[in-house]
Length: 145
Image (cartoon, rainbow, N blue to C red; front, side, top):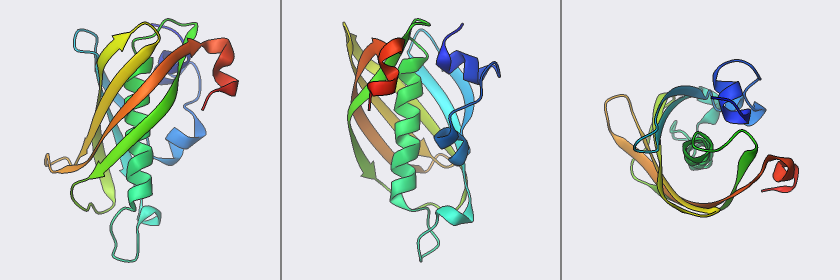
């Protein structure tokens, strides 16, 4: 498996700085179900005054969960551009390890519907998201959102 995503996963390229900031860790990908499992490490610096991880960081983690779900299924010369993401927060979470599961729900041509969920290691649902993304040529990635 090659391409920007897999090159980062296998250490042939650095992971993106934003993913590194979130403590991104690739865990697994199931090709048959188009499901990718990742993890993040939320430090104390991600907390709000109540000591919970700020929702904006959880939204960024969800963004970095739906993206890899699609990226893992693409050809080496393809990339993805997220067109929208809708986030729902279910429960507060303290700093630490957060697990993410992302899935390609449907793909028709260059459009894909995605979903993701973040949980604690004890399977407490923290946040979830649905997203729409477009598959684009890798050469267009610099101009994508």
